[in-house]
Length: 202
Image (cartoon, rainbow, N blue to C red; front, side, top):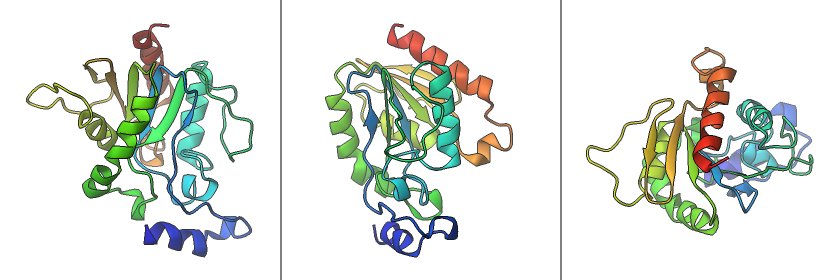
């Protein structure tokens, strides 16, 4: 929490003239969504700056372009909370609500925020699929499912786990570490959302 607020005060030079949000970041999207996209945490100069998860950073550029191609967003970019972005049949959130140092949330942060994630999912009455961006999000989602088999299913790109009411679908995270290296490509991400739509019943 202190680090999140420190970043908001210090600011990055490129955003020195902007006032940072600097508080916990909630999910957003279509309350009737059948598809939930679960990330790690707000980026220090993305969601922590703009007040909307995956907004104003390169990970968001990748994510919302993919949602747009899948017909789940009305535009391919998300730069600010007032940019006109609307999601259709999709809700975007994160396992951890505050920007962590080095963009690496800890298991303790995940566990402290789990009550908020559980409450959020409970409100999304039509949710059928959770697209987990990375192993951290996969583990956070697993902790909320009843009757998870043993051994616990491991994260992998394209992994699926059907639970009571929800199916988890794994995808490599849209971080620059994956997109710049080619570990995650646009066709790979598009295939994940095509599968999510299929599982959701479209």
